[in-house]
Image (cartoon, rainbow, N blue to C red; front, side):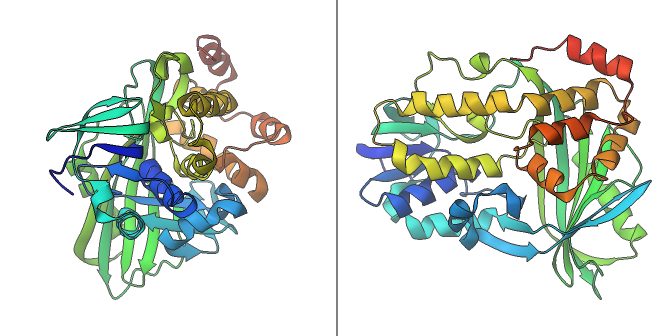
Amino acid sequence: MAGQSFDKCDIAIVGGGLAGGLAALCLAAKRPDLDVRLVEPGPIGGNHIWSFFDSDIAKKDRWLVAPLVRCHWESYDVAFPARARKVRMGYKSITGEALATAVAAALPADRIIADRAKHVAPDHVLLARGGRLLAKHVIDARGTGKTSMLDCGWQKFVGQALTVEGGHGIDRPLVMDATVEQLDGYRFIYLLPFDAETIFVEDTYYSDSPDLDVAAVRDRIATYAQRRQWNVTAVTREETGMLPVVVAGDFDRLWPAVDRTARIGVRAGEFHAMTGYSLPAAVRTAAALPALVDRGDLAARLRGRAAASWRRQRFYRMLGAMLFRAADPDARYRIFQRFYGLAPGLIARFYAGRSNAADKLRILSGKPPVSVRRAIAALSRLDWR
């Protein structure tokens, strides 16, 4: 509870976002013998909607997110200037509120510490309101840390849930509507129909800069709604975000080996380098924790997992380099337009971060949607560790 100081526990998870919340849920379910504390100053889960494809998560791990799902669709659409397609692939959405409810049900109230960590060490946390929490293991799940050591582009967005009087007429997600004006990089609109009169509209940019003019993007969402001839009577939620799209970088600088505090989630570099999405990796790591927390070398084990994941992401970092370094900003949509002409299985494996050798060859084969000369020049200048 807020303001209360705790002396000792088995596991202290710092950060109640997606990675920290899922880790707490999994440990509560699989290791009820452990005293697990979650340190989070704001609402657990925050103001977020996370979506994922069914194929992103292994069947054995789906029990962890199943109670959090608020919407499920059997297919989704994409639209580009020269391609429109319905993709038959299951798609689900969960909310920060659902995560908060699940964590509150799984952990006793006195194990949720509504406070900020002012110092995080391998075996203790210093709380902003005073007090020291000792733990066998501290797990840092505080989200994005310093990115200055990474070569990044950005996926940034403003999303609003709109109430549309008389209905919006959308019956499944439109994951990318790139028929809109291309501004500030690759721009697309993302639609999630929650019910007949409620639709989540996100205006997204693959941009060179993390700068986000929220007021301007709100106006663009309103213009898009007008184009759809929607009678919008209310905006019931709004969220913003900036996800790093990593082009290159050294994992040893992101998480130095001398840092012996365990990390998970984006803090550990566990996210898809091309899309910035972290939910599949967060589920995999949460599912692995119950078998790892008895080990004295938890931090080293988690760092090894994160480093291996970073190495596997090299192909996606290469694609990011082609997007941000070899394509003109207003022509970046062509890369995704071409990608969505490929087989559904390949698309599914791409988003799950499990592209095989044949997938990679297929993605790179054929007429390239970017300048070959610029692509070679961009790739030759990058740090591929």
